[in-house]
Amino acid sequence: SGNNRISYNSSASAFLHGSNYFFAVVYADLLPALDGDAKTMTFLQEVVDILLAYIVESFDRETKVIDFHYPNELLQLNNWELQHEPATLDDILISCRATLKYAIKTAHPRYFNQLSTGLDMVGLAADWLTSTANTNMFTYEVAPVFVLLEYVTLKKMREIIGWPEGRGDGIFSPGGAISNMYAMLLARFKMFPEVKEKGMSSVPRLVAFTSEHSHFSIKKGAAALGIGTESVICIKADECGKMIPADLERRILEAKQKGFVPFFVSATAGTTVYGAFDPLIAISDICKKYNIWMHVDGAWGGSLLMSRRHRWKLDGVERANSVTWNPHKMMSVPLQCSALLVREEGLMQNCNQMHACYLFQQDKQYDLSYDTGDKALQCGRHVDIFKLWLMWRAKGTIGFEAQIDRCLELSEYLYNKIKDRDGYEMVFDGKPQHTNVCFWYLPPGMRYIEDKDEKKKRLHKVAPVIKARMMEYGTTMVSYQPQGDKVNFFRMVISNPAATFEDIDFLIEEIERLGHDL
Image (tube, rainbow, N blue to C red; front, side):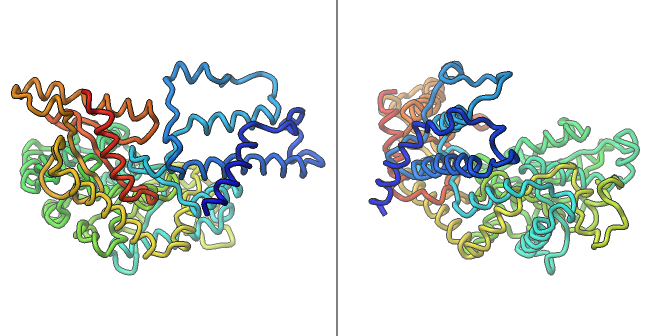
């Protein structure tokens, strides 16, 4: 209740000013020190109190999203340097408070800057538990429950994609870029398994295809795998940002005529800027025709599979060989949580295994298929599964569905509110397919400039100035960028479950307030 919040904030203010208790206590006094129990409990309780105060504050619309300082200022505001001698725990608590004071409140209902926003309380609890367990995902013997939960959850995700009985494989990786790179790695191994031992000199010139609107990680993966960025051919997108299948087929035939070997097509389900969904059925037909691995980068849009109202946008995804899906975006699972799902079982193991006998002994007393570490590129692998699994238990599939539907409803509300409003121009025609709403704001003094080049030149500077002012005032955050020949425009994305219609109204009013004099 409101009264509870007021009383909590008043008590929380005490935590922000420190405690004399820890003035003479140091790290060596905590567990595993003898008689360290009481000091450890008191210290951790103090840390938890700092965190709880920050969480409550993050959801308060009266607080700033950001207390912005330039890097050189922030370096001087606190002593961030590492010392030879240990600090007291009082200093450690001060550092905790300072870190959160200058952190971006990504849980704030008016934080719209990235594709990953919001803070889920069950997910947060799961993250705390995961850190407390502090184990590694490589074998069942050191992470029995977490390995089983990953098995159960990946199977469920494959069922939702539409693969029969959830068969296939998968792994949680450190983000969508790595998941996409895994897919490219598997596609290359599937076509040329000798590359694992003999390297790129043993295979012909490989080429991959992706939309000109796709994520930069496709090229980055090609660079990392030794395929090269010049071997990634960008396919034209239509005015709404969707890949044009006819251009894909044309470029495949061109590559084959040059003697290159097409091995990988990455279709995007929810592009980063426009939120576009490539036509997966048409793309899969082409991939089948030319025997090319089809990957779907659904890092941003894959979560729409949870929504009966919106999953049609991914029709054809079940025909893919692999799918990237980031629950840390639209499903608001705390960072990081990205999955690669693979249709063919056993391929990841064959591609990546190195048979390290000090980890993956073949004479263990349990089913060795649960030792998942050898199919990963990493040895040490963070436990990312528990956050997603516990949230899924708490919300159910219908809870995620309602959350996703609500975010899309808010984006449609924003689109309908600004599409005919004075001073706004949409970047492309038609209702957005995802929560991305792309638009220009034209201040009053710019609306009647007749010289198109001059108008374009001045418009390019508007979004950066408004964004800088947003950060200076700390009221909200929204992203901007150019795209192709289009000058800087705002890209509003909604994935924050705390956002409301009133927050959308506030954003519009704030853009107009901060930009009216430009």
